[in-house]
Amino acid sequence: MLKTGDPRCSESRRAHPPARLVVATLMGLAGASSCAHVDPAADFARTRQLIRSRTGAETAYDPDAPVLTHEEIDALLVDGLTLEEAVRLALLNNRGLQAEFMRIGVAKADLVQAGLLSNPTLAFSAQFPEGGGRSNVQASLAQNIADLWQIPLRRKVADAALNETILEAAHVASTLAQQTRIDYYRAKAAEGQHDVAEKNRELVSRSHAAVQSQREAGLANLLDENLAHGQVLTAELGVRQARLEAANAKRELARRLSLSRDVEAVRLVDALADSDEPAPTAEEAIEIARTHRLDVQAIEQATESLLAGIALEKRRILPDVSIGPFLERPDRRATPGRDVAADFVRSSLTSGALTVPGIQSRSERQRQRSREIDFLMGPALTLTLPIFDQNQAQIARARYEYLREFREYEALLIDIAQNVRLAVDAAITAQSTAAYYRDQLVPQALQSLEFAMASYAAGQTNLLTLLEAQRSALEAQRGRTKTLLEANVARSRLELELGTRLDGAARSSAESNHQSCPGLP
Image 1 (cartoon, rainbow, N blue to C red):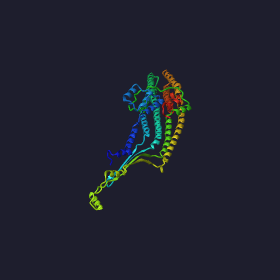
Image 2: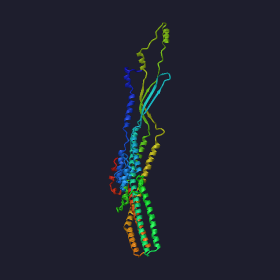
Image 3: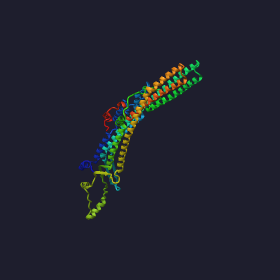
Image 4: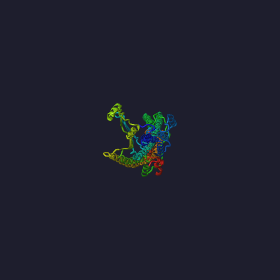
């Protein structure tokens, strides 16, 4: 054993530094790991910026901000709900969109994890001699250095996956905004149909009252009065059915806004838009869609991630290459105890006289002890030999995953082209049909009703003509509301296919997502 003050103690410290090396290495790795922190705030901000550029809404869900309270929602609904307020509420309160933001946090955590070194492995063993003495002690510290050539590609894969998740979340928000508009239009149209039904009930009630007056005057018979009363009963059923449809339409809107309260009494402020603004041509719309569709950009990021994944799998042919220091203290058998009497007898017999046995000096004992090896140390290497498994299956799998994603990308572009053509045609047709009702059918039906009412009051026509005129006017008004709804829905569906609002579709490609969200390829 070495004692304090022995000159070999200092030599031993200089010659055997493994303990300090182990501590320093562990502290360095621990310090590097402590610097890793998952903070997706910047990624949330990028997502909200994309949402603003695609929906026109000024606000969107922020996981780091307080959620909307019941009082704030009540204050928003008390004076009625506008279209843009509905869109804003959906982007802030929809639970599905909030879940998409959590996926961004998961992808950010994966990116941070991809840049971390694997933890070192510390091995220690002690073997105790059967006959006593010093134990055999072995210790090693190993670090997998395969991370050094895998981390850059792992980060590239994870970064592309994060960008893909951001684009997908923004696409979900853009789709949510358009679906909210469609639900708002449908609820507003259902409200309009309910108003038309109430007006029709009022009209047929007046007609019934007029028939009753004429019958009392002898100008109408009981059949006329019964026909008029039948119209009143039918109109009452129409009002009840229209009320139910309006309430159900508002409930669907509330579902989109993630509201659990009863919204039947909530007033929808904005009327259905009656616009003659022309839609873009099919080819113009296809180009806009390819530039602005976030799902297209998301699948492009997915192909980038899979392409980097092929290179990563090739680097995983050597999955585990570990190096580190190794230390061993060999065992030593215990020095047997000395039998002085036996040594005295042996020395006396040998010399032929009484002789004191020889005694080994301390310096001799130390010199003998110094020839023994106290420690063995040196570098250790552990390598997984790629003899049977050269990762060829995973490389092939990654390659086919990439090819599959690329084919889906091509299929998406084809679907977009045809869906945009369908949407453009539907939008143009619905807009022209709504204009035809507005400019031709409704004015003509209302004019015919006025003439019929005047003629019936003057006794120049019969009740059946009046009832037919009322029916035609009611159908024209219903058709006007229906076609106006179809025009608004068709325009929203066209915007959904384009991936942006039509009022912002004229922006150049330089103002598209590549500038609005720096960092995305």
